[in-house]
Image (cartoon, rainbow, N blue to C red):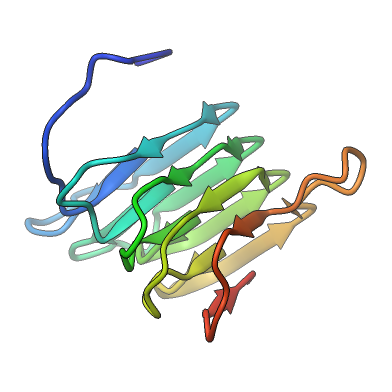
Length: 168
């Protein structure tokens, strides 16, 4: 468990994720449950050589998925993801998953207060994105992309042109 860290440093990264799960190779045996619950995630990306994206929760495919797998991403707050390097094409992603499972539940999450100074066409925003196959149940309910109670938008761009917006 990392509750807070200000000591991470470097000059480049391919991708920065608050929580990353999954397995891109190998075989999953038996049933599995992945639960990502009740987290608050904030990341500032100011690496000079940059990353391709900054993600709150990022799931990669679970190789050789079995029909008895379940994924729960519930009650998380993703706030303050920030790209602070101009002239970049870094993406900000709230919750993304290419994980395949029998059941996927992405509920009651809040994605708000994220900012970017990216000035390249690739500097886009995704709120929630589930691209993996789901065999039985897919629930994406009661998520807040932005916060109307506090008038906090999901994303603020300091430079805007032809950006791609995906909220779901």
